[in-house]
Image (spheres, rainbow, N blue to C red):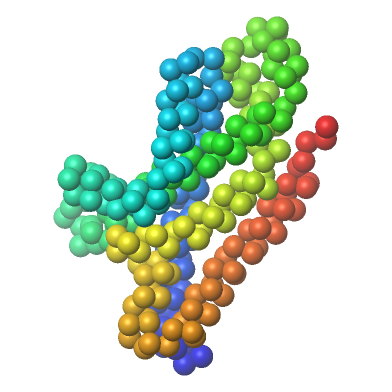
Length: 226
């Protein structure tokens, strides 16, 4: 426990960064993924094609490549940093926000497919009944399909969120000071690989296990009766 006591503040700060990466990316991915799902369900061939192309390309691209592209391509080549360049923490802030962008773009493809699968569980007669009442596609999606779809896929969405939490370790590739980055620094400084690995693994278990239990309970509570 001497290593934990020595690095206690850094460990808590690193996992706090991991939590922030997860939270911001989860919100962005949920919004973007829902929009993509609507595109894939829309009665417009061009939107269907764009949504399908996005999902197939992004989902089959390594997350590391997406994160590095956000840093080198978006951040350095295009000069989009999402931060004030005069700030003393501009580099760290920029890396963090570019990591959120990459995680959002990647995770949204999985959210899209999860939400779309939830919509597909809804009986076709409900959508047809809404159309017969004069509902537009947007109204049908917003009032009839999506509320039921989200209730049906709470547990799969929880699995996507857990995977996102673990995927935040890729942000260390562009210098974001989250848990995996700190683990690398600690191993270089102490060489206590096993102890440090156990500490970090325990930290991720403490983050992901409650999420799994919560989404499991919520999914059962809000399950749509068929």
